[in-house]
Amino acid sequence: MDKSKTLNIGSLFNSYLKERKSNIIMSFVFVLIFILIFKLYHVDVKIALYPAIICMVLWTIFAVFKFYMYCRKHYYRIELSNHIEITLKNLPESESLLEADYQNMLDVLMTYNRLQLSENNQKYSDMSEYITLWAHQMKTPITAINLLLNEFDHDDKYKIKEQLFEIERYVDTVLQFMRLDTMNSDLLLKEYSLMKIVKQGIKYYSKVFINKGISLKLDEFNTTVVTDEKWLFFVIKQILSNALKYTDEGSISIYVVPDKTLVIEDTGIGISEEDIHRIFERGFTGYNGRLDKKATGIGLYLSKQILEKLNHNIKIYSQLGIGTRVEINLTTSLPRK
Image (tube, rainbow, N blue to C red):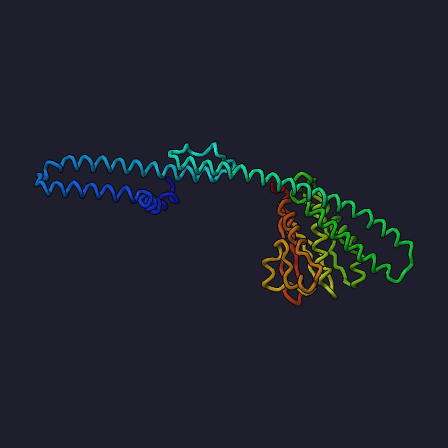
């Protein structure tokens, strides 16, 4: 018996006594009755002494055995509860009618929960398929509108294109969010040029850099990483999106430090100290998100989840009014299940 179980013996013994409180009280009552009768009839104590000792020894042995069985059943049930594959077939055989009644109730509840789980899984599957299909179909009219806009010469043409770009980015985020659960089956791990992936992200946001007048400081680096290009590209886009969104002037620096850590650093408004520990929570937008009404609190959550599945790490350091520094360590490569 290990230490944790030994520490629980006291509480187990108390529970054992409480459950048998009425039996123990009745046993003492019977003993008192016998003592009273012996006194009333002036029976010699020696006559009852030896049978009493024998009964006490037998009762002690029986009590110790019953307590041992009580502990054994308790730990067996704990062991069963720690296994996901637990079913009613694994439960100990009921020793009383009440235990059988409880097991029947569990059977009814398990059947009901199984049906509910099946219905919920089906609903989630249908919803997931619909949203994924919707996201794919949305890309077609977005592309078509972009092509149509190229044929028009209007003052608001580029403003409309900017809004279409935002719509496309949000649709892409939704699509990746729906694919997150099945990400492991969609991985293609091999060596990639990190500079190539970073430049794809920069090209994606090139117009935003120009329109906002944000300068880019890109250090050339010849770093190869074992990763999935598509998923890492999505993460880099999310980080660049945040950097551009919360940087009104100044620059964004991108470089690599030893141990294959990609750094994306901006001179934006920064993140408050009370928000920095929660930025990877799903749906959390913090103070910056309240300023930007379009913030969803999904981008960094997705980035964290994706990098964990790729077995990469991400850390964010920030100071209000100074800027934010994002570090993505890419030394590891084996994806997590």
